[in-house]
Image (tube, rainbow, N blue to C red; front, side, top):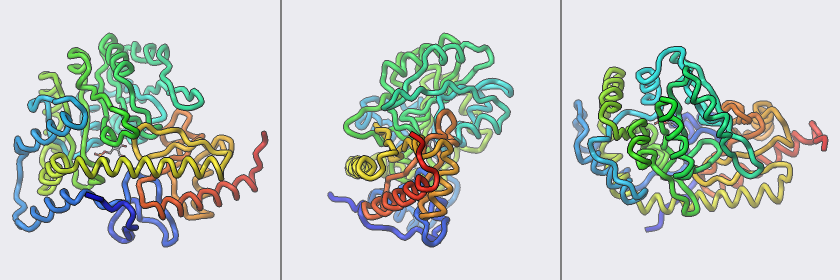
Amino acid sequence: MPYDFETVLNRRHTNSVKWDVGADELPMWVADMDFQTAPAITNALAKRAQFGVFGYEEVPTAYYQAVADWWASEHHFRPQLDWLMFCTGVVPAISSIVRKMSAPGDNVLVQAPVYNIFYHSIENNGRHTLASNLVDNGDQYAIDWDDLERKLADPLTTMMILCNPQNPIGIVWSRETLQRIGDLCLRHHVFVVADEIHCDLTLNGQEYVPFASLTPAVAANSVSCVSPSKTFNVAALHAATLIMPDAHVRALISRAINNDELAEPNSFAIPGSIAAYTDGHEWLHALRAKITANQRQVQAFVTEQLPLVKVVEAQATYLLWLDTRRVATDSAALATDIRKRTGLFLSAGDVYRGDGAHFLRMNVACPTSQLTDGLNRLKVGIDAYVAEHPVKD
Ligand SMILES: Cc1ncc(COP(=O)(O)O)c(C=O)c1O
């Protein structure tokens, strides 16, 4: 069945965080797609609304069965049903897990540049962020293993938040890399929180490896966070799942999620998620083809029209990481300048820390005409910036 990824939707004045912008502005920042979700989800939600009763609800076994079946068919790994726990979002769960599984003053290790909200979950809860920065090797990023091990071995480091696939750089970590990270964490008594929210959005046949599928001892020392929210653009359904292979970890984290009141679904979270995981396969596969095509369009445009900019090849996600260091070394100033001149709203890379100040992040999950508009604005913005701030080399 063909799906429509080309109709431009008018999301202005719909309470959309992304589209709360000026009349002529074009937002390509937050991780939110400008596509209607899979018809199977819309139909399930309409049916639920039609029923007209919205009392307290619990999570049925059918939800966990749908999650397990999806992982078995999409990711060749079947989690046991008793490893799974529903919660109302990945970020609230990470904050809750930080509070439960580490102590105030501890170090929580991240690999920067990485999803900026991790820093809020860590620092707003009185923990320290300890970054083992990823090293840009020209085409993509690599792990500095000596630095990582030294920081994991610090007795104050008790937790690592891993992002796989990694937002914003688009890497999908290999099984070998994940196992090596997991072994190091085990050796140094560091608990692993694996944020796998972008796992369904791998490109070009790339496969993601669930952290819970690693060796039993490594998997036992972890919780993985997954959700249909990025895959199907249903963030406001507020549905996510924690995968916890170890019974003791489950007992602790289940207490935390319940104490923080994150365990109860709204009326639409369960039917929407079951529909996504049961009937969303074909839609997802079509979406991946659209994102791949959009990534190619950006690469071709940038190569031809913006020789000072480089696109980092994303193995996953619809977020492109644009290397703008030859234009400006302060991406916040550059992003502000482009927005002011052209209305194009991109994410400045500095919020992801690490070497992010040399990058802009562009969300390419939109119809072709919108993407073309965004690219044309990007060219106008970069050319004008360069005219005023000539490149020295
Ligand atoms: C890596 C990562 N984790 C979590 C989230 C948000 O998760 P949630 O909306 O379930 O809190 C995002 C959103 O962009 C993300 O990129």
